[in-house]
Amino acid sequence: MILGLALLLALADPAPAAPPVAPGVPPAQNPAVSLSEAGRAIAAGRLDQARSMLGTAVAAGAKGEPVDRLLADLALARGEYETALGLYKALLVNHPNESLLLERGGIAALHVGRTSEATALLDRATQASGAGWRAWNARGAAADEQGRWEEADAAYIRAAELGPGRAEIANNQGWSMMLRGHWADALASFERAASIDPKLPRLANNLELARAAVATDLPPRMPGEGDEAYAARLNDAGVVASASGQRQRAEAAFAQAIELRSRWYAKAAANLAALDGAK
Image 1 (cartoon, rainbow, N blue to C red):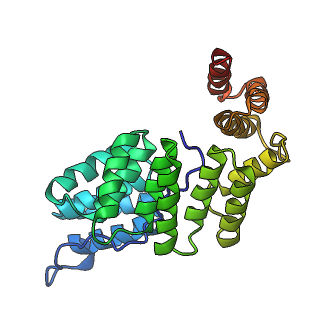
Image 2 (image 1 turned 90 degrees about the vertical axis):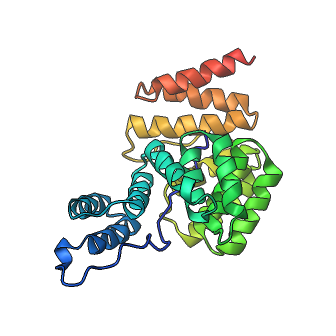
């Protein structure tokens, strides 16, 4: 599992076209208006509002692909990746070469661990007309998941060409470097991402992991941090250390996570047992 991916869709692309507005129908009762507003709500992260608007539109008679597209986007934004993947695949039956559907289906597949399926969808997305930086960024993440570093580097370079100044790309490049054990390069990428968008999800954790790795130390507990949050970060540190062959550091991280007795106990214990079994 790639713990530090910044694959949040941040729907900035145009929402799918809504049905034509029927003349003489009040806006509140017009399904086209409701669908258009729902698309804007998804893009803005107002997901509960979007779900309500979609319900209103369906009740007013909206149906078919415009609704299915928004349902897929809403599921993806809500982290309901299995649902999103199924909806995107159904839409792709009639639109097999649409880059946006391929991109978002690939992202959903990547999130549920279907790396081969994600790679196939993202390959098609990046070969399609209109492929954007998100498709290439996700393709790099899929390559990282398989340890195909040259593919990952090429994908991130193309993503950066299409989306210059995107913190998400620099973050994923940093995680790719961490997986390879290139701590200093990882730290430089994370710091570049932070200079663009310091509030990017997971970036602060990734920065801390890289800094700890460079300093050959484990992440310290932050002031006021609870057992669960700290154990999760220790487990992440152990995963990264294990992936790069730093066995002693991985053992220390997993052992400390176990001692916290949080919900991360089982995961950290399993990771430590896997290390022991590899001796």
